[in-house]
Image 1 (cartoon, rainbow, N blue to C red):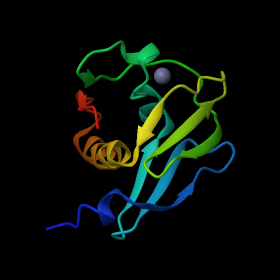
Image 2: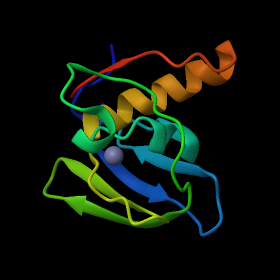
Image 3: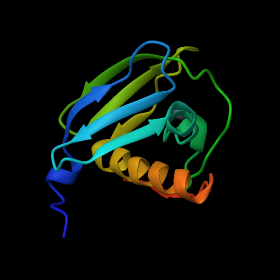
Image 4: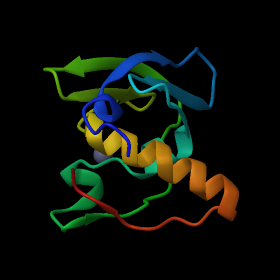
Length: 117
Ligand SMILES: [Zn+2]
Protein backbone atom coordinates (compact mmCIF):
# COMPACT_ATOMS: atom_id res chain seq x y z
CA UNK A 1 0.00 0.00 0.00
CA UNK A 2 1.49 3.32 -1.06
CA UNK A 3 1.98 5.98 1.58
CA UNK A 4 -0.51 8.73 0.66
CA UNK A 5 1.58 11.44 2.33
CA UNK A 6 4.78 10.60 0.47
CA UNK A 7 2.80 10.00 -2.71
CA UNK A 8 1.55 13.59 -2.69
CA UNK A 9 4.84 15.33 -1.84
CA UNK A 10 6.97 16.38 -4.79
CA UNK A 11 10.69 16.60 -4.11
CA UNK A 12 11.95 17.83 -7.46
CA UNK A 13 10.58 19.01 -10.79
CA UNK A 14 12.30 19.19 -14.14
CA UNK A 15 11.11 21.25 -17.07
CA UNK A 16 14.04 22.22 -19.27
CA UNK A 17 13.41 24.99 -21.79
CA UNK A 18 12.10 23.54 -25.02
CA UNK A 19 11.17 20.22 -23.45
CA UNK A 20 7.74 18.80 -24.09
CA UNK A 21 7.53 16.59 -21.03
CA UNK A 22 7.28 17.78 -17.44
CA UNK A 23 9.04 15.53 -14.96
CA UNK A 24 8.21 15.36 -11.28
CA UNK A 25 9.91 13.26 -8.62
CA UNK A 26 7.83 12.23 -5.62
CA UNK A 27 8.89 11.50 -2.05
CA UNK A 28 7.88 7.85 -2.39
CA UNK A 29 10.37 7.40 -5.25
CA UNK A 30 7.89 7.53 -8.09
CA UNK A 31 9.00 9.60 -11.10
CA UNK A 32 6.11 10.99 -13.10
CA UNK A 33 6.35 12.28 -16.64
CA UNK A 34 3.51 14.38 -17.98
CA UNK A 35 3.58 15.51 -21.61
CA UNK A 36 2.93 19.25 -21.79
CA UNK A 37 -0.05 18.54 -24.01
CA UNK A 38 -1.71 16.64 -21.16
CA UNK A 39 -0.60 19.08 -18.47
CA UNK A 40 -2.09 22.01 -20.38
CA UNK A 41 -5.12 20.06 -21.60
CA UNK A 42 -6.03 19.13 -18.05
CA UNK A 43 -5.61 22.67 -16.71
CA UNK A 44 -8.06 22.79 -13.79
CA UNK A 45 -8.82 26.55 -13.92
CA UNK A 46 -12.35 27.90 -14.35
CA UNK A 47 -11.49 29.46 -17.73
CA UNK A 48 -10.58 26.05 -19.14
CA UNK A 49 -13.09 23.96 -17.23
CA UNK A 50 -16.06 26.09 -16.26
CA UNK A 51 -17.36 24.97 -12.91
CA UNK A 52 -18.12 21.35 -13.60
CA UNK A 53 -17.42 18.61 -11.12
CA UNK A 54 -14.80 16.81 -13.15
CA UNK A 55 -11.85 17.97 -15.21
CA UNK A 56 -11.86 17.11 -18.89
CA UNK A 57 -9.17 17.31 -21.51
CA UNK A 58 -9.25 20.55 -23.51
CA UNK A 59 -6.88 20.65 -26.46
CA UNK A 60 -5.09 23.75 -27.69
CA UNK A 61 -3.10 26.54 -26.08
CA UNK A 62 0.61 27.25 -26.08
CA UNK A 63 2.62 24.27 -24.85
CA UNK A 64 5.79 26.12 -23.87
CA UNK A 65 6.19 26.06 -20.10
CA UNK A 66 7.53 29.50 -19.17
CA UNK A 67 7.41 29.35 -15.41
CA UNK A 68 6.60 27.10 -12.47
CA UNK A 69 5.75 28.49 -9.05
CA UNK A 70 4.90 26.69 -5.87
CA UNK A 71 1.72 27.90 -4.18
CA UNK A 72 1.76 27.44 -0.43
CA UNK A 73 2.49 23.88 0.51
CA UNK A 74 -0.07 22.23 -1.69
CA UNK A 75 0.06 23.23 -5.34
CA UNK A 76 2.06 24.29 -8.38
CA UNK A 77 1.11 27.10 -10.73
CA UNK A 78 2.29 26.95 -14.34
CA UNK A 79 2.71 29.90 -16.68
CA UNK A 80 2.37 28.93 -20.34
CA UNK A 81 3.84 30.61 -23.40
CA UNK A 82 0.58 32.47 -24.04
CA UNK A 83 0.67 33.76 -20.41
CA UNK A 84 -2.14 31.48 -19.30
CA UNK A 85 -1.41 31.07 -15.59
CA UNK A 86 -4.71 30.61 -13.77
CA UNK A 87 -4.43 26.87 -13.25
CA UNK A 88 -3.49 25.76 -9.73
CA UNK A 89 -2.50 22.12 -9.76
CA UNK A 90 -2.67 20.61 -6.29
CA UNK A 91 0.01 18.04 -5.53
CA UNK A 92 -2.66 15.35 -5.26
CA UNK A 93 -4.04 16.31 -8.66
CA UNK A 94 -0.54 16.28 -10.19
CA UNK A 95 0.00 12.80 -8.84
CA UNK A 96 -3.22 11.65 -10.50
CA UNK A 97 -2.05 13.27 -13.75
CA UNK A 98 1.30 11.46 -13.49
CA UNK A 99 -0.37 8.10 -13.06
CA UNK A 100 -2.88 8.82 -15.80
CA UNK A 101 -0.09 9.85 -18.18
CA UNK A 102 1.64 6.55 -17.49
CA UNK A 103 -1.56 4.59 -18.12
CA UNK A 104 -2.36 6.68 -21.22
CA UNK A 105 1.07 5.91 -22.67
CA UNK A 106 0.39 2.24 -22.17
CA UNK A 107 -3.22 2.34 -23.30
CA UNK A 108 -2.59 4.47 -26.36
CA UNK A 109 -3.86 7.91 -25.43
CA UNK A 110 -7.13 7.46 -23.59
CA UNK A 111 -8.19 10.81 -22.07
CA UNK A 112 -10.62 10.21 -19.25
CA UNK A 113 -12.21 12.91 -17.10
CA UNK A 114 -10.38 13.43 -13.83
CA UNK A 115 -11.60 14.27 -10.33
CA UNK A 116 -11.02 17.69 -8.81
CA UNK A 117 -8.49 17.27 -6.03
ZN1 LIG B 1 -6.65 26.95 -17.54
